Length: 233
Image (cartoon, rainbow, N blue to C red):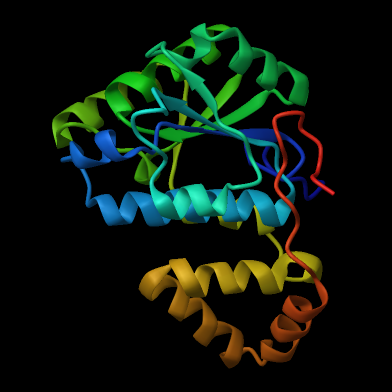
């Protein structure tokens, strides 16, 4: 039997990342999660996309009246958001065109509100033949019930629910991949809370600290992917 990974696993070269409406108005109305946790997870997602050179797009609604939350805006300053009027991002041709141009059939989505501006494009992308992954802890709804029911609806339609650190772990997958191991360990340490600190302890326990530090020093952080899907120089 060959040792091949499952086809449903994410890898840096098989998906794109779509971040939807992590903006102040929506964040102020979130009741399903602690807003600070959503922000932290959203930033961790885009930082992971940067490390692994994953095509990534942010989208906003009525940006002239409300910006992306500051930590996410700072983390994605090399990416120009697509501003829309539609509740369903998949009804904006610019966004569908961007996804198509990546040439990737797996699509990872996070945003708010879960029950509206996340659920609609997830269901629409599924109908269009994409394999869609929803990062549930980087999404938020108007209530816990609204968020939970939206996740159930998306899963019933065929979406894969994942969480932020599952996403990062699938992209790294093997600590022998030294070109990204140091940056990923740093990301876990900075944004992973107790889990991230536990990972640092495990590295030290296994005497891998020198490998981690060396790879972090040698590998510069990649530039973000703009809407063209190509690295920024």
